[in-house]
Length: 432
Image (cartoon, rainbow, N blue to C red; front, side, top):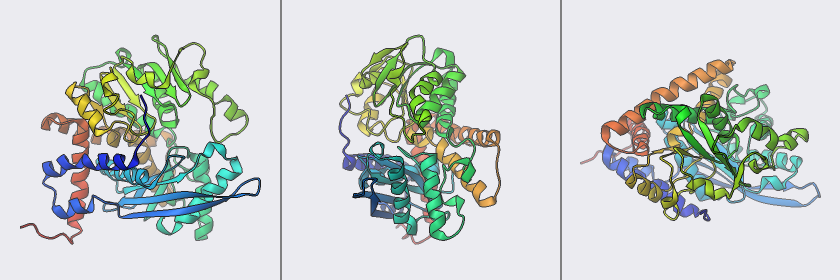
């Protein structure tokens, strides 16, 4: 069912979602023109001296899509399929999602075209530091604040933060978020994306009068965000019947407990202090093994998409049997795929709302770094819940009131705020 991603089509597909938003909001022509292209797109070459003495050069990018509402904010991914169009699309989504949950940020994203799992720990550290040296001139706590994304984590962010400190000859903890707590990282940040997605699912389930114990979930992906979502959802009482990762999928009608599965999956990583885990969920013995893509076709209440973009599309959407979809990954459902789901009355809880927990707590980390404060994990989690409950309620109520999809409601909420900010800054031609 999977297919090779075309990042040019991905970017066009992402922007196509704006057409009905612009029309519904009667957005000024100047605003439309500004939002069709990124403000800045930087391509860099990252040179890394390998352990055997060879020099390898990896292409990298940093894109700032729009900074009307504040400095650019967005993660850095290390992946062999990364290119400028993918990074641009991701930065566009970041601009929208920051506005959806009313954060004082614009959208940014970064990436390096590399398979980081083929690098040693020292080679990976040299890559991380080299990337920061390459983009240092366009980042900073008041300009562009990187964070973790696919194949980057607190360890990698710690290396990057240290490198930036060396470059500026001082301590700038607010320049990068998702750091280890010892370097100024926020408590609660690691689980924030998954925790935020659960808040959104809970709001939707409550409005649909669904009880967690009567709701089955199949989760595609078992990285950081998906694991913490699964762990918290299991604790809440949701029945997780299937999990998958790049190595395959597992299924149990009675339900799966993600905690012992993750403990078993990461045992080798913890024993040898590895940056990445090479094991699969398929290491679990008390479950039925499935092909990875079979998970997408299971008859469940909610299909949770927490892997990569472009997973549900016009070629496979007819095989989806779930009653609703939750997007933790960025852009896992294409516009054509979503249109086909809408014809079958299958709602999608969109990424620009559902996966904002990470950037919300990154914002709280930035605030703590700039003020010198240290918040407890309980305080961070409470503030995350308050913001998502308030902003999520606005999206769900708008969708119901205006008779539109949750994604359309979220986009209208975010673009409305960005457009207002652009107009308030001036330099827009008066409409006739």
